[in-house]
Amino acid sequence: MTQATTTAEAMVGSDRVSSSDGGQLPSMMVVVQLGWMMNNRRWTTVSNTAEVTQHSRGVRQLQGARAT
Image (cartoon, rainbow, N blue to C red):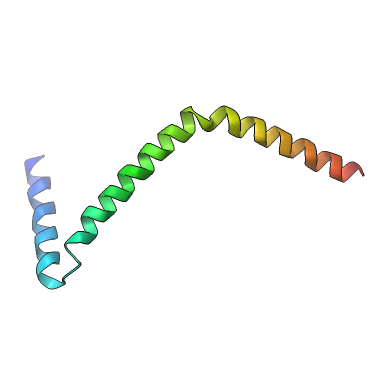
């Protein structure tokens, strides 16, 4: 565990040395990934039922359009 964190810190440090915004990039990626994970979890729990009802409604509309 500690070895992985130290290597990650070393990579971030070398990025910061090589370019000005390179040091901020990994942290931004982590923030985006965390936000996506949280959004994904919320989507699966809260919006799953709404998504299912929307999907069935859309299928019904498609079948109605196909019939007419």
